[in-house]
Length: 222
Image (cartoon, rainbow, N blue to C red):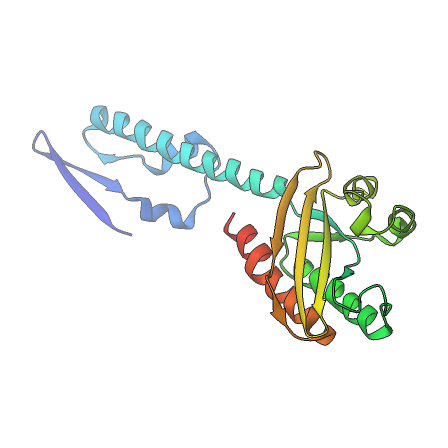
């Protein structure tokens, strides 16, 4: 423990420094003042200093407690991630139907997004399987005009997420991810990859890049 001395009226006052508090856990303002109790003479001056230091430390502990309570209260965001869909704009779109490999890579893309969100610790994934019929009856995510927001709200989610993979050609594509606030309907994020090279097997890789660089990085900074 460190000891500081200060000369007042030809006498010395010995004070315990804040290092003494490392082994204690005061919870009341009176306890803080007791720790800072002076030794020796000069009690008139020490009482004022003691009250000031005690009040300062009590205020600091109060601020820390409030900040911790706010952080706990914010919690994780409940997000409903709907299955990613394909928007085939290629020359063969409308002629050649979506095949099994396309469907598999759309599924892998969706699962990769859910995995990344949950692994971040900032999101809780809401099961959307019960809303699949509603999406289908509305014509799919591409044509339902923002139906994912109300559907996700009914599921108890704070946010909804959809993903569209646009196939420009058999070896070119782009990815769009849109996040919406389910309470207000406002768009939280709407990001794109730009044109990327690769066939359908590369879609999950493009989705992962977009999540990492345009969704997760921004929300981590916030």
